[in-house]
Image 1 (cartoon, rainbow, N blue to C red):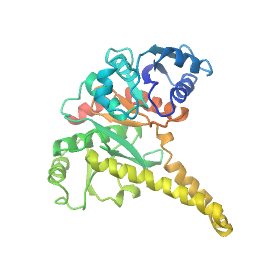
Image 2: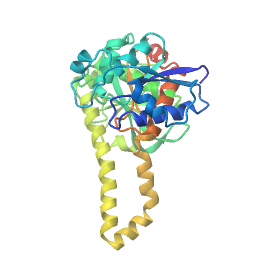
Image 3: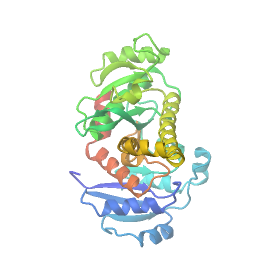
Image 4: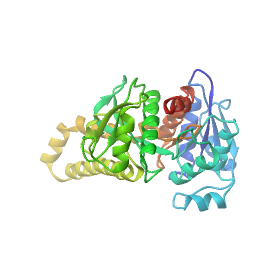
Length: 340
């Protein structure tokens, strides 16, 4: 970081409880990266977990919050019932300038709604977008990352053309800053590559993006292009994006399950799988969401990173580093300039 960055980390509400969240924060505090972390949640519980960790007390502190939003709740009702809960308290720290970005592994709907209630939307953005990385065959950027970005994947189910254009600008800025891709290739997800294919919103967005100098728009892509990685950013409405993302996650799990079952059944299969072990390891690495840190919620004036509900310490550490980079590289300002 060029300047110290403080992250408000919602430490409650994940599938694994507070311990992996605390572990990730402690790991970050021991690294020379300029990040400071505010652990937000029940003070007694967090203090107990923190006592088991090696950490730098000058870069890690606890902020008490009453209440937790469970994974299986209705977000709006839960936030109304728990106004002092950890996610709202963490968001308020960012709004009031005590922290620069928000990270949470809690209920996705509650994270998005807390951001919407607490932060301002960027000018020109009507709807927020939840972005996610997905594994690809092609490599991307100077680091040869084996993944690309897709948005929206669930924050806004139905979009008009202007929403899709906003998603394209935001996705391009995020890919440029986080993945260090100078000019990310952006495409609309449709049922054909021709400009006339797709819903009326996709067709209209295609025409608008074609003349948008802030985005390296390369046209439409189809579903078969997604795992090939022919572009760096895929833009779609949230309903479709969520279905695609869940399908990709399911395929990776099925491949692992089939390989495990085959290994247990037949000697020849075990021999063949042993020969293919390097390839299988590569598949596991490509589909390992822990290395990606989290999914950005784009469209607000403050960086918001939604970590996976099953995040371990490593995943939380990476989510905090992504949030720090978004602050350091002025992601919100980059999106503003693209939208202007």
